[in-house]
Amino acid sequence: MRLAVGLGDLLRGSIASATATTFTVNFPDGFRETLTGTGLTYNFLGIPRGGTITTYRESLNGVTTFEITGLNYSITD
Image (cartoon, rainbow, N blue to C red; front, side, top):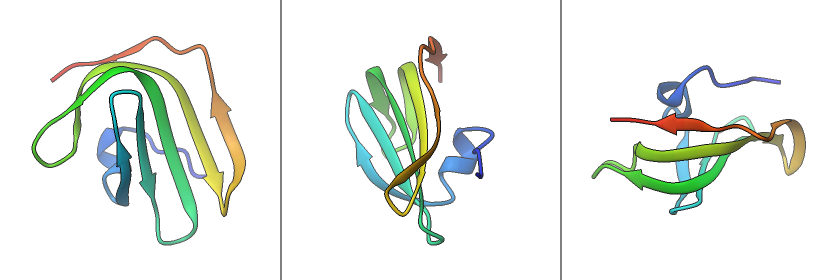
């Protein structure tokens, strides 16, 4: 397991998806980290700048290795 400590750590990978409900980052070692929430917004670089995170999920080669649900974490600029 390799839990990203902050959004800055997530940006060390390649952004795979950035929508109003999902932000997914792929890493070269096979890990994928997904933030799910509501009202997610991004700056011109694709970095999350607003919204609320409700789920944090980490997977390795398609298998979930870690998941936190029931979050209410607000992203602020």
